[in-house]
Length: 253
Image 1 (cartoon, one colour):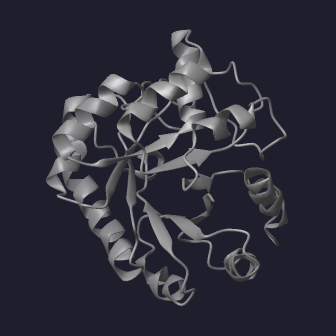
Image 2 (cartoon, rainbow, N blue to C red):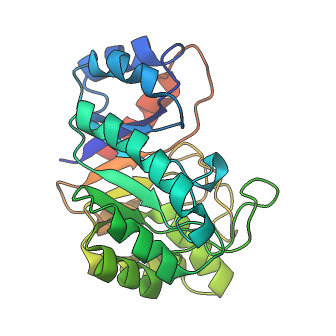
């Protein structure tokens, strides 16, 4: 049976904390994937009290972390040290990294290797960054060749994000489901999944499962029975996580 993950941010100690406890007790999810917002290490103690398994997601470019550019090396290291604090204190199984924006994949691989982080997973990305949001143009780790290069240099694992793979396939004019299968050669340690409003788009929209145009059954066919899958769907309420219950049921049906 799949292990289902709930995606939260480290600063979500006010609005979703109690809801996470409720849903975990009800068996809706199996772990929290916690995105670390820089300079939020003061929340570690509260997250630790949950006594729930964790996977950690390193900040991405929108929060200043960009391994693709050598000029960001020093600030990247400072952010990574905060991420490591979360991972160590919460006994996280994995730490997920984005490859960065623009720059070059060789620098991404080199910087990730320099962390010497045995829990590191590189996540595949869309080919093009979200306009007016990510501040760059091209994402690193958008195709199998770049993922292979990063993995070989950094000796890391891999997180297959289906939504990102589909966006990248659309940018390159490739069949979306066949392109997703290309990434299976890396034997993903875990997966990310959302639905999408338009599966022909180069951008993802993080819709709830079954509310978009993605063939969820085709995705399930690619998953091993014991797959670790974080559902990165949007949260429609700041008061509860009821919408996530439907996502979990969709995966387990």
